[in-house]
Length: 304
Image (cartoon, rainbow, N blue to C red):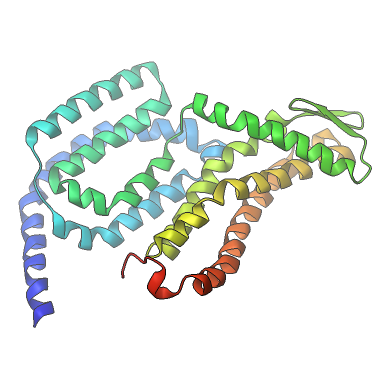
């Protein structure tokens, strides 16, 4: 009886929400389409078509699935926010988004458009609902390209490290290999890690897919989930190290043409598979250890 009494207000609230907002959503649909679709098309053409943005469609659909799965529980906390706050935020974000579209800065345009859509959602459901949907909202943000200056600042040291690690590893097996900075010399060939290891930028793709797996599998155990998140970047580096080795060996044994053709793309597929398999393997090894060290009563589960 208590469960039924608790369910009735929630059900009535959901019914009122649908009845009071269906007309508003219908009116907004056309405006949102006119506002968001051109930017999304721009992001698809400029980012999703590249290797480091290939995760975009996967993240978008899985992120919307997460929103749909959690919507029923989240909407029970609906509250109407201040109109002044909503319109003030929208005015600023839309103005900045228009400026970014004019200048064709895709990194800014995508995030500003997404921020505007979040404000529109906030206007209908309030802050508490957004808090309950925090992970899907953050996760969907991976469909947009990060600022290139930030990517360069993070990936350049990684490329240097991968170059040195690959040279030292293959030198152990007697390969005629040397290097200078991001340049690798093997036999009569010269490779640039900046080109041969373009997959370093796929750290974003690997991180987004790994975060989705960790959240869906272990969202109730947030401490264990946080531990797995710490391993994402090292796993991505390991996968890129495997890719660099494959490309160097292909260049040495099959020639530069073979390494830059179909086999180059195949090396990228191998890299992604290695990373995903490493996340699964790490989870299967760490989880039993975690359960023994932290019994269920001490894990800090979200559902406890």
